[in-house]
Length: 223
Ligand code: TZP
Ligand code: MG
Image (cartoon, rainbow, N blue to C red):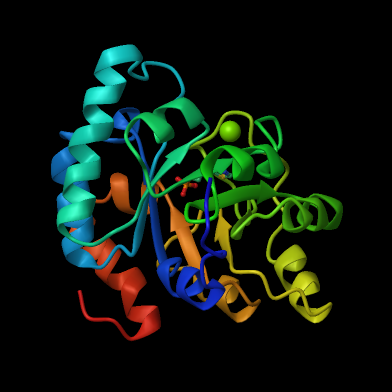
């Protein structure tokens, strides 16, 4: 049971600016170190995405989630869980992010109530319309550029879908994803994205703090 209304979409929009996604397989150093440095640089929201070959499972996954959630919370950074709704509920995460092969947002909304952030990956105008109708708070649109961080990524689509959605007046908060770095982020924001979501640009950087700060500087935020 939930008495409150939906999250304020302008608040969600501002949270999306520097959206860092990571799991243990994306890091060559302890994930907690990478996350803490990235937050110091200016990450505004974090997604725990523990998947792919070598990903932790069971209790090890739960323990890492709790550790990273603690770091996020001590810095006021929302902690979002990729795919794993049971984990999100178990640790009272701030939200979940799902793809097209996962539970639809309308089911998640019933399970999570109105106060949690629900994000959906969408690749076509139809998927966008459905996610909005289902009650998504924000969308991830991509892959904008080629990526090596997701084996089953859809075809690269550049910024055209983001541009078309905004041209049609679709105002939902959205981030671009896929192969985005400080060197190619600008067209994504110019197309109408509210933020940039990245794995490798921060997780694989020699300095996650500097990488996050450079992305944050697009929004006039000091890292
Ligand atoms: N969804 C579409 S592309 C992608 C995901 C999770 C991977 C993004 O990783 P990177 O390293 O920022 O290209
Ligand atoms: Mg998924």
